[in-house]
Image (cartoon, rainbow, N blue to C red; front, side, top):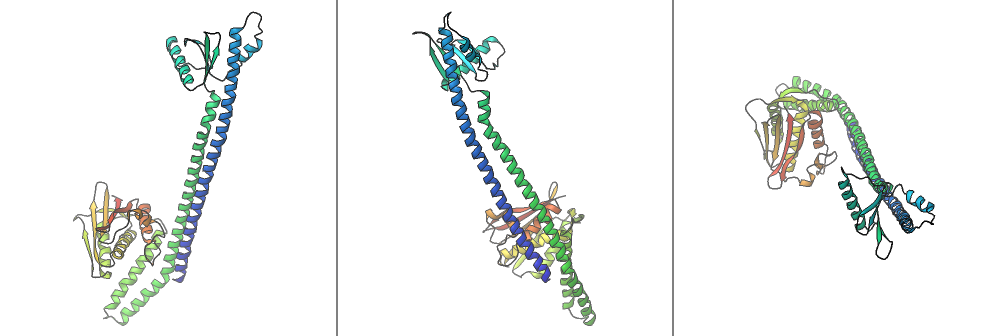
Length: 399
């Protein structure tokens, strides 16, 4: 038995250390992701700003080339001017006259079905660029001028969006890493549970066998003693507990069982050992409620809920166990008149190690959740709880 306690203690602290390690790794991953995103945004902003200034300078030169072209005479050398004008292959440009008519456009993908719609699309683009102050006015004479409207190049647009693409990639990476860590943690916990359960069942096996032998000796020696049968039932109870641990250590076999009989068996056991100030009532249908169950493990779940209810009521109050056959499931509710559970703890009470008692490991509800959700593919949760009405735990199992 001492070895079993050592195994439990080591397992508990191992899980706590593993949980702390996972939390630290998640914090590091999040901080690294934030750093990468902030650094990427900062660098991209610098690059975008520099590229914008460079494109503005290019458009200034292009506008001067247009001025020179419009003011040129037959003796003007236009080779350099034409090279500048034809060298723009990236920045979209629209040239408007003083009346707002389109004179020319370049590097602009027109999305329209006919010439009239195309012209309207180009004018709308030019108006949008003018509103964004992306235009250069070229005075041709005292009364005539041209408006050079320009937008952002495709490279500039892609560069502006690149940090957000990086953000998405980093977030996906962090989520995958956290999921992998949680999966690894769950796998490790499963191994620990299996090892702990098998070791506990093994450690309990030898002393229980000895106790059973001694009970038989006492029965033969004192056949009329009324206490010996009660001792025998307690030893059988210990044997059932060892059987439960052995089943937790391996995948249990589910067999069709009447939930009413399982609940009644637990209630009879609790009633004989609970205080007289605790009233236990059941509300179950008359017809059978048969579902696939591992009866020894499910008894453990109901028993654990009842014992927690007795502790919450400080051994004074009432417990009501309700069994209902619903559409495609069986619902079992355990209600008490205790002091209730704060709403912020409705989920954390099922975590390993969580306890409000001065004594105990905080594994009861964690085991109950594992038995219901992993072995029976069901669901267990706190349906309601308040200091005035007590707590109601609900278990849902598929029929």
